[in-house]
Length: 565
Image (cartoon, rainbow, N blue to C red; front, top):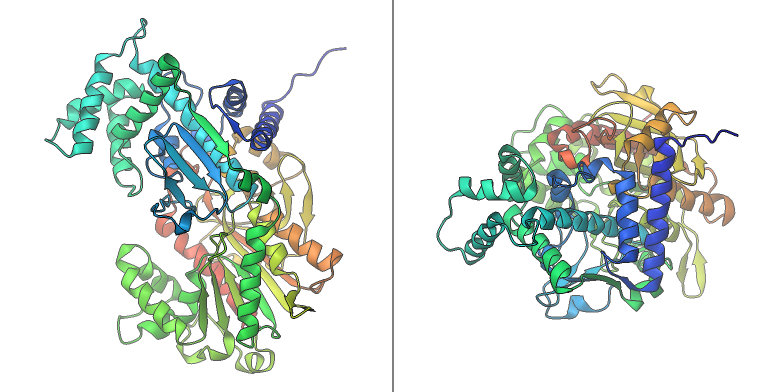
C-alpha cells in the first residue's frame, strides 16, 4: 500500500504539538539547558515549524533581525547577558530592593539578580510561559549563528569579532565615538547580512526605548554561546517551585475578580446590570469623556475618529491625561491591578454620563439609562489562556459574608487585535465561532454584531470562524492556509476568543451563574496578515491605521449598551 506523503500543514501542526509537549515536560521537570538534549528537541521543532515571525530562522548564516527586534521588545532589557534565566511566580520581589524591569511590549516584572541571572515573573498563565520559552528558543538559535559567524575554521575569533568587542566596550563606557560605517561593516559580517540590512536594523533597534543596541545584543549572544561551546559554561532555564505549584489554579485571577466585585459592592453597583468589555483602556474612556474634557481647551475635530487621531502618539499624552482626570470626576473609576494579572479595569457608572457632552457618534437613550442603570466594566487585554482564568473568575457569584451573590451580567463584548487571512491591516473581522488550533475544539455562538453593520466605512469587513492559536510567535503560513482553504473557512487568528467563550459557556450553560441569554459581541481589527510576506507581527505596529477600526468597534459596543436602537 502506497504511503501518503504528509502535507506541509500536517508537518507544521505536528511541530507545534511537539513544542508544547516538550515545554510542558520541561516545566514539570523544573529546569533544562537550551543546548542540551531537551533544548535541542525544542530547537528542532521550532525549525521544523518555521514560524513566519522568525523569518530566516533556518538559514545557517543569516541572523533574523526583524524576529530579534520582536522578541527583545518582549523580553527584559539585558537578558542577552544572562547565563541563567529563572521563571517565577509573584514571590515577594516587588517588595525587595531589586528594581523591576518591564519589557516594552509585555506587561511582566523582571529582576536582574546579578551579572549572570535574570528572574522573570509569570503571572498570566501557561500561554505566558509558552510565549517566553518560544522567544528564548529562537534567541538561542540566532546566538549559535552569531557564534559560528564569529569564529574561523580553527575555532579562533575572527578580526570582526575582536573589533566588535572594542565597539561594545566604547558604547558601554560612553567613551569616544566610533566610526559607525566601519562598525556596521564588522557587524554585517557577524550577522551574515548585507550592509544595508545591518544599518536598517541598527536604526530600528535604536528607536525601541527598552531594547539594547544591536551591537550590544550581538556581542552578548555570541559571547555566551562561545563560552558554552569552548569553556563549558552552560546556559540554563529553570522554573521556581512556587510557579509550578500555582500554574493552572487561578490564583491571580481569583484575587483580581474578588477585588472588582468588592469594589462594585462597596459603591452600590453590584446589583445593577453589568456590561463587560474586554478592550484597551483608552477607547471607551475617550469616546465617552473626550469631547467634554477638551471643550474649551482644544479645537475638537468634527468626528470621534478625528478626536482619536489627535489623542494618538506622544503629542496626545497631555490631552489623554486631561481626559482621564475629567473621567474620574464624572462617573469613571480606575482599578489598577495589584493581584499579579497585570489587567487593570475601568468601571463606568452610566447614570453619571452627561449626554450633552458625548460626540455625535455615541447615542445615549436617557430614558433607558434611567430605567436600567447599566454599569460598564472595561478590562484590559488578557493574554491567551489567561482570558479563561479571568473571565471564569469574574462570572462566578461574589462570595461575601457566607453568601453567594450572583451578578447580573447583561452583555459581554470582546474587542481585540487579530491576524487576518482575508484582508489587510486595519480591516475588521466579525467571528461566528472560535476554534482551538491543534485540537479543533470549537465554540460557536450567536454574535450580536453582523458584518453588514460595519460595512460602508472604508474598511474591508469579513465574517466567519476564527482560530484561537496557542501563541503569536508560532504563526505558520501553511497551517493558516489550511484553515483558510479547507472547510473551516477561517477568517483570522487570535489568542483569547475560545478561552473567553469556554468560560462564558461554562458560566451560562453548566454552572448557571449567569443568564443563558447574555448578549455576546465579538469584533476584531487586523494587526497583521501572516499569509503575506512583510505583513506579519514582526513588520511593526499598526500606528494610526488602528485608530479607525478601534473607535468604530468601540462606538458600536457603546451604542448597544447605552440603549441606542
